[in-house]
Length: 601
Image 1 (tube, rainbow, N blue to C red):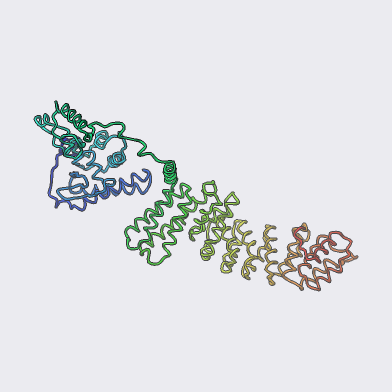
Image 2 (spheres, rainbow, N blue to C red; image 1 turned 135 degrees about the horizontal axis):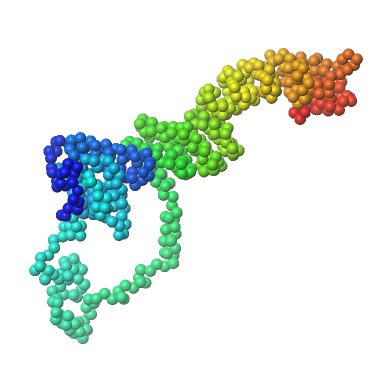
């Protein structure tokens, strides 16, 4: 064995092994170091250096080494082909060469390792990089001994042998003179038939030739040739016919085009359905919890939707997941519905990373929970794309139907965009329980919030909300007052008749443009019914002092209001004005008789 490192420990000790009493440090702690080292190396291969999963494994490895240094300053390990030993005890073992940490060292000739206190500092990740490079070396790449020599780690020393001569007894000088390659071939049963094992180096060839010639002359079979001829390798024996070549090409294309990620996910999800393997179930759920946000950040909707759909189906089946695994599965769906995740999804829809018409995206949004409502509402209200708005509102509607109380709870949100979206959703779901909260929002400082409450009020049959709308009739915002009048008319809230009568008699209303006063007349007619006919008939057909009539606009509004009443008495009042000379009034009367409203006025 040759020492491949002249490094020393921080205390000045040489790298020679210095066995101590094993009772000072339990073997299990040493085993834990190498189990953790294996996991950290796997994480190094799978994740970027900035990934939280990778950082967690490296932190665990540092803690494992720190626990060793509490009782000693160095750790001496012997390396075998499939195991690592410390003071005669096996602290790591794996017979699978492709996965074995021990074989990575053993393959490149390292037989002894000494880890010293301080390795857990800046050198730890350099060691992981070295092991990763050595494990994945191809062709003429450097072996682990060369890599470690280049790194010159101060807290790791090692002893190595020449792997070419390891385990081979070299012959002495006298043995070399008697070396006969044919004897070796004979021992391996590789001497061709007809070749004598004890033929001498000189003179025997002539005798063999003579023997062959004599055999030929005697009519015997020709001995096998002692040389390899080109004819021995007839290429036609190994050629493929066109059908075979096409089959191989087709299978190769299929393999190259195969979705490996889907295959791996299917394998993980299949094994998640094995209730007898509880530890493995928890490990798989941990992997899925890491993969899902990675898929979303890459715009990989198909695997993300696949994970969520399958996970939801598994967690709903009895007897598959234990209590702990059920909590982990719920946690994955909770993470998907968190404000951070939903905000990222909305942003991806807005910037085009997720196409809003994608089936996978719709499937993914279907599994969001009540926690997602607030960021979804905010995104839907602020989205610049109509397609994005439509998609988000569809998702909101599905979640809101299953979580109605959560929608009502959003009326306490300080965000006006969330409030507006929640109010609209309450109107669509006709949540009468939210009426008291909506009345409170009629005093909200944001005018759009108040306007949205008024707009949805006609969808919610509530006397509490209708009573609140009467206050809005006096709002200085004329458009808001008009909306309140339309809502009261639509709900036919009878107690509001007096308030609406006051509005149609106000001077500023009577002098306004026809489109700005008509909603008050129509609402009054709808709410008061036949009780409004005498007043409206007097405006339409009545004459004042000296036979003067009301203005054309007021008479037209009264006519359209009578049309909203629709009773025989109202029709009679309209018939009396059918022959009116004023074209504005005549047009309004005819429309009212036909049952048309005054939206185009």
